Length: 283
Image 1 (cartoon, helix red, strand yellow):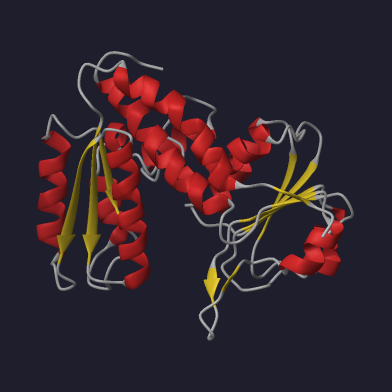
Image 2 (cartoon, helix red, strand yellow):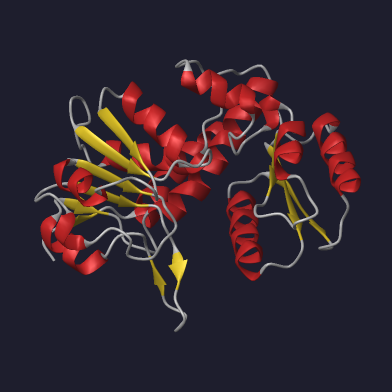
């Protein structure tokens, strides 16, 4: 492997002291509420990691677990309670939600100023206009990884593969605001290989194992693999064929250990930012 590894675990650890300093400067600890509906094993692991990180940073935090058959009205009533709770600065509803729940309605019910996932239309609209907003955690974490590595974005050809509102679209907006020339591709893009071969930066967030072949990567390109897919043997792989890609790329994120830890780190940062704004210490 010749590519430089972009280690999200290491960067998340290095960001923690500055975040603790910001927490200590607040009149009261930041408050984070995480809501989990059902018992999806992967979701339970993610929620536990968020709980542990918030606890280590000194947050006031609550993890609320609801049964899988929770009705829409009950979940919305809980969101309403958290919206008015003065101890809570950030509200996160773990996705995916059970089929009887309208996720869009639930996410839209969270107050924009407490929307630490950055999914509310007010936050996404502000982001689209380059205004201060709570930014979706995964794209924000990707930008921090790129900045920490000192990788130039201005003028580069950036390809984002995946157009979800959670990663792909906000990722494209952030890269465009950093003066990259951005192509937003997806699972139906024709001749995806040609787009990948031209790209100086590839952000893969399509949710398909090894969807982007390593041989397609432009020599020296930066590869950010947001995907995390569990195979039949239990192993985890990304959306990019890692070994061959790492032999060609200039820098690449591992799976796991690349983008995932930064997503949680940015959730913590968004919660502190929300607390600062709500407590009169706006950033």
